[in-house]
Length: 370
Ligand SMILES: C[S@@+](CC[C@H](N)C(=O)[O-])C[C@H]1O[C@@H](n2cnc3c(N)ncnc32)[C@H](O)[C@@H]1O
Image (cartoon, rainbow, N blue to C red; front, side):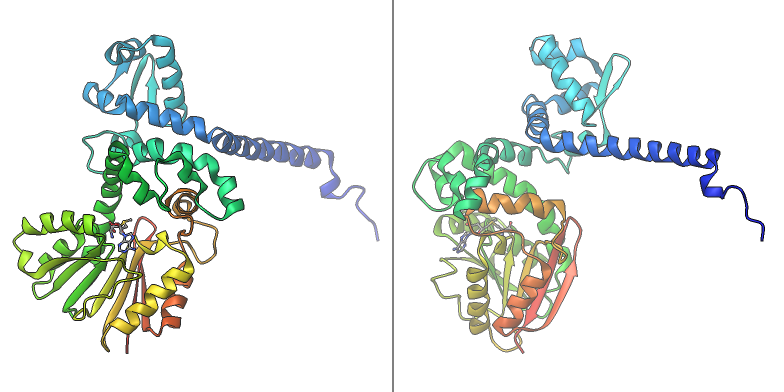
């Protein structure tokens, strides 16, 4: 049988087209990888670019003027033109600003997230990352070796957690509270919309902070009574907020340490919102067992948090938040997976466990005492 002199794969034209394709793919892929390496390697500098622009309120100023030249920006900020040129180069490269001709304007990203008048702005979160976390996070490697929050040495005091040490620094504590409120306000509004407490009689919000959650729940569910369970100083803040609202007769604040003090007797629903990430697996299991013992039959425990995927490869929010809990906050917490929370609930005795994924990498897990 006659064979072909050349196979298609060996034809010089075919080989050349393959080679061109390979070159193009490599160029595109390498460019992407290169960009990623720069974003990682220069992460600290790019974050400081963002932080400097936020400190100077560049995005809010640009929003008011719609567009400005470099000279106008430098003059408005009362800065020399060269440093402003450097800042603008960074912001434009990162997609925080757009440059058309000689004019700079905000992008959709900066308009939404970095302009103070935007309802979704994260300005206070950027300030928290800069003024509290940035220096302390440089101790991450030591924290891994020591398995403790070595980053705390950046803060005055001898206490074991960031929360306690911030009490020595009023200015930073305010920055911290502003950031927590900014993070919680939108996430907790989602919690109140999605969590159905129609069957509950008495809700205990452990680590409930300033009372925002229980106030919103009492407004949504007219037969619900609820209490914050938090430290004495935080309960004072919650009491002041409760006193101002029309549903105050159904609300209270109960000072205590959830690990050592008993929960109030009449409670039939216990909520942990943005709380279990602070603590180790051992402490969280201990808390869930305590809830099981304290609740009546038919009672529920609810966990509301940002979640780590069960595949343990994301989301970025979990990869970003977890080192913070190890290096700075308590030295023992992290963003745990859905599976872990469910398992801890089951081991504590809860059944009929339901999971509900929510936007912003959040989720709800509800367990019942049957
Ligand atoms: C991250 S904040 C969460 C606030 C609120 N649950 C939210 O979702 O916005 C953690 C809260 O837990 C409180 N907390 C910390 N340790 C506690 C403990 N051992 N017992 C009770 N509350 C505690 C803190 O005072 C703080 O209000």
